[in-house]
Amino acid sequence: MDIGILGTGRVAQALAPHWLLGGHRVCFGSRDPDTRRAALESSLIQGLGAEAAAGLSWRPVDRCVEGSEIVVVAVPWDAALASLEQLRDGRRRIVIDCINPLRPDLKGKVIDDATSTLRVLQDHFTASDFVKAFNSASSAVMADSHFDQVPSMPICGDNEVARQRVAELVAAAGFEPIDCGDSLAATWLEAVTLLTIRMAIQNRWKGDCAVKWERRESR
Image (tube, rainbow, N blue to C red; front, side):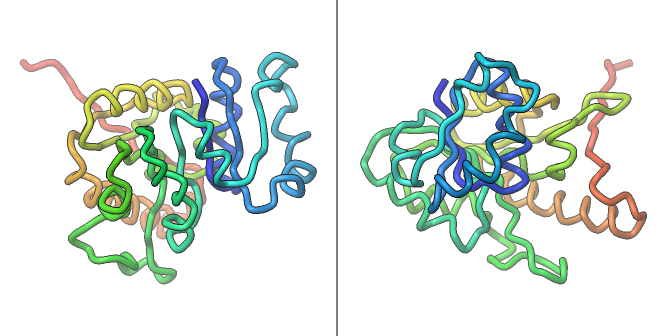
């Protein structure tokens, strides 16, 4: 699978090695790919092995989107719309929205509380199938998701097949994917993330916390 990750920050760096080890090809999309490659590539491929490392590439944002089946949006919200302009080529892709549009003071979102970044993006780029995922854990947990139990990663989106494919990538990153249904749930997933961050700050957990939803068989 050809996966394009827009952004080269902590979330992007945390997710890419999991997918490379799973045999996927990963392209980082950046405004300055040569500089970011020089700064990051050696640390990213450390321990991956030659075959997995060979699946990594670096391209300008538009070319990264153009060559990808699945596009991961791991940029700040104010850069997201511009980064996805290549989606207007009409080709159908799966787009994973990792964004949390939170205010700096963590007292709410920078967008209307009644909507989500997922719904805003899919209204702009109607040819693609959007799925919300990887917004409810810190980059530290994405890089190393080992806990006593497998942490949960809720996902949502309007296309069931797209959700299933994203669920496979969630599992490859070490999480239990939980299907939350259509895009309406994205607003609530952003709220769950805000709550998780506030709990982590209040209890001094730093980034070493994750959500786990348990279930049991009916009695």
